[in-house]
Length: 352
Ligand code: FCA
Image (tube, rainbow, N blue to C red; front, side, top):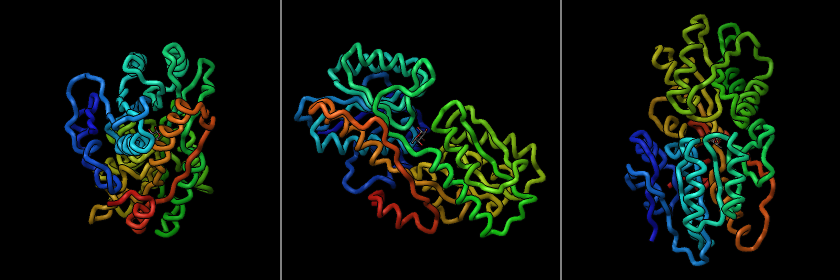
């Protein structure tokens, strides 16, 4: 029997669950998508009929984001295949990270896969896992040591610079298709420089937008990494630059770009004058599906299966066969647009 309760999810996350449901592959049972989040503060386990006695905890920073729900879903697939018990935990607040790890250790887990809400907790997380005899891997956001350098533990993340660069190139391509005049076109980049993978993505986007006038590139730091964070950051720039007619938009992920597009909408900038390209695919696809095109032009679809399945499967092999996972794995993405998303999702095993 599978069962899951989500930890500390808000109403907004229920909406997120609804959004992601259409991305989930055939064969997914209701455990990841259908349950009402638990309002309490209990530890939440997705038991997968474990045969091996192995328990692995998969901790994510933003459980309301469809991206992380997909990771969990694919981690469950590994749990079912390998026969381990998966503990899915939300760690939305950096204050909770260590106590939640303590908690999974007390439950008898032997390994932790984590995307931490704060990568600077790396040293403390590593120490806690060592003390409690837990193997540790990071996913998506690489944990940093006290010296600000990545921890020497296995990590699986995206090729952030390369993926960001492909966003920049795709934005320029679409600008050419639309024959926008460089004079009144701006590149709005929603940034989150304190997170390395985010900075690499947005630096890459600027690099990919080769030849774009530097004085028409506007960076807008987001305070929170969600749609409102992207929207608020963008609003400041849009207010400051009424002279810009057309907007290209990049950011660290879909919610950053979708937020910025929402900001253009509330300023009544016509959808035709906005081209936003996100990263993840899991959130932006909902905009691509809408009958009426809006400023969300596309997204780089990441490989959630590799992030969720491969990490948990590698952890299982590490625990049970002492096979140490690769130190670093970087994954790629593929441009999703209105034109190709049905086909691409199908090819990636992400459609119904
Ligand atoms: C980060 C972002 C997520 C996703 C992931 C691969 O953790 O916050 O949205 O892009 O990297």
